[in-house]
Amino acid sequence: MRRVTRSRRWHFGILGALTALVLTGLTGSTFAAPQQRQASLEEHLEHLASLGRDVIREKPREIRTAITFGGIRDLRALGKLADSAAAAGAALPGRAQLAPTVLAAGQASDPFQPSDLTSRLAGMTQSETSAAWCGDNAVIGFNDSGSFIATAFLNRSASGSLSFNGWSRSSNGGASYADQGALTADPLPADVMFRDLFGDPVLGCTSSADFYYVSLAIDSGFGFATSDSGISVSRSHDGGNTFGRAVMAASKDLAAGHFLDKPWLAVSPGPSSAAGDDILHVTYTDFDGTGTSPCGVDVARTAIEYVRSTDGGATWSAPSVIEETCGGTFVQGSQVEVGVDAEVFVAWEHYGSFETGRDIRLRRSGNGGSSFGPSRMVSAVVPVGNGFLLQGAFRAFIDLQGLAVDRSNGPNRGTVHISWHDGRNRSKPDPFGFCDARPRYCFGDILTTRSSNDGMSWSTPLRVNDDAIDLGADQFMPAIDIDSDGTVWVAYHDRRRDARNLLIDTFLARSDDGGSSFSEERLTSRSFPAITGSQDLLVNPRYMGDYITVAHDATGGRSGVIVAWGDNSRGDANVLQDRR
Image 1: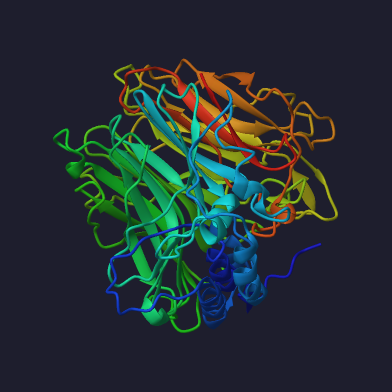
Image 2: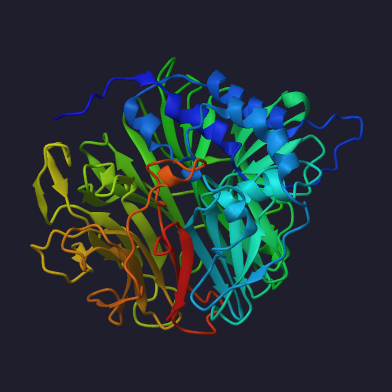
C-alpha cells in the first residue's frame, strides 16, 4: 500500500532533534564573564525542548524523515526529564571524574561503564562508529547515550554542556583499546553558555599526534538569547589521548529554521609537519526551513554544503553549496575525500522521494576545495527493505556508505571508489513494503563502482558479497577504504548465515586487483540480533546505527585496516573492533 506523502507538522524534526540534543552527554568549562548566570540542567533541557517546538514548520514527509539527529530519540516529554533531573542527580552516588577503562581484546567500548548502568532504561547504547589510524595511535569514535548520562548526572562540568559522543584509543596500532569516556566541547567561547555535542562522529588524522573528531553540535547563548545548529571539530595533538575545545566548522541560526545534519570529514597534512597547517574538509546537510531564496516562502530547502580549514581546524571558510533542492526532493548522506595532489571529491545521495528516484552523485575539485566542477551521476540506486526500514524495523535509508581514493603508489593510484547497499538484485512481494514504488521488500547487496578518470565515468556496479543470488538475505551499511599497498577493503553487516534474515554478522572483503574482484571473511564470532533504540529511552526507536567504519594507517607505515562496528551480541549495543 502506498504511503501518504503530503506535508505534516515537522514533529519528528527539529523538536525531536532539539529535545534530543538535550540527550547529548557532554561537559564543558567556560571562559564566560562571571556575571553571566549559568542555567541549571532543568532550564537547559526545558529550553531545548521549547526551542524544538518553536522551530516546527510544515515540511514534506520525506524531509522530516530524512533527518538523522545522530540517533537521538524524538523526546516530546523533555519537561518530565527536566522536572526529575535535580532529584535524580542528587540521588546518584558521587560525581568523580570517570577514568579511562582498559578493554578486553576485540572491544572498543566498555560494556560495564558506570554510565551504562546508572539507569536500567537508558544510556546503554554505543554504535555508529568512525575510526582514524596513524602509526601507533588509533581512535574510534561512536555515538554513546551513556555519555549523556555521564555528562548530565555523573561528572558535570562548569558549563554543564552535554554530549552524545564517546571515544576509545589505542597506542599499539589498533591491537587493543581503552574507553576514554565522553568527549566534551570545553573550554567554551565567552559568548556560549552551552555547546552540546550530539553524535554522528567522523574522525581523521594526519600524524601519530594529530587527530580530529567531527560531530553535530548546538550552541546556546547566555540567557538562551541565541541558539545555533552546527558542525563541531575537536582536535587532539597527543595521539587521541585528550581532545581540546570543540570549534564550530559551520554554524547557522537554529531558531530561524536551520538544522545541520550528517557531517563527514577528510583530512590531509599541510605543506609543513606542523598541525597548524593541516587541511580539513567537512561536508554536511543543511535542512533549511527559513523559507528564503532560492526555494521561496514555506518551501523546504535541503543542501549539501562544504567548508574547509587550512590552519588545522582553527578557522573555517564560508559554506559552499554542492547541491540544493526544494520541496519534497532532498539530498542527504554526503561523504568527502581527498585525492592525489590537490583533488577533493564530494559524493552524496539525491532522493526524488523515499519511494523512487534515488541516485548517487559526485563533484570534484582540482584546487583543494576552492571550487568544484559539475555534478556527475555515479549510479542509480534501488533502496533496500521498504525504502526506509530493514527487517527488524531499523532505518537504513542512507544508501551511499563509502567514498575512497587510492593514494598508494601502485598501478591504481588516483582511482576513486564508491560503495553502497542496493536492492536491485533480489526482492519479494510484501504487503507492508513499498520498495522503489512497488509493494515489495528489496534485499540489500553491497555494490561498488570505480572511476579512473576523476569521476567522469564509472565501472558497472560490482556485487561484493558472494552469497547465492536467490538467497533472501540482507547485506547493508558498507564502509570502504584503501591501504598503502593499494588493497581495497569493504566492511559491512551481513545476514547470510540466518535463513530467517534476522541475525547479523560483520564481514570484511578485500580486493587485491583494484576493486575488480573481492574475497570475504567473517569478523564476528557470534551473530547478533537487530536491536533498535526502542530499548533505550534516549535513542530513536528506529535506530541501530547509520554506518560502520574501516580505516587504514594514514601515515602509510602499515598495511591493513581497522574495522569497528556496533554489535548487539551482549543484548545491548556495544562497539567491537578488529584489525586485519
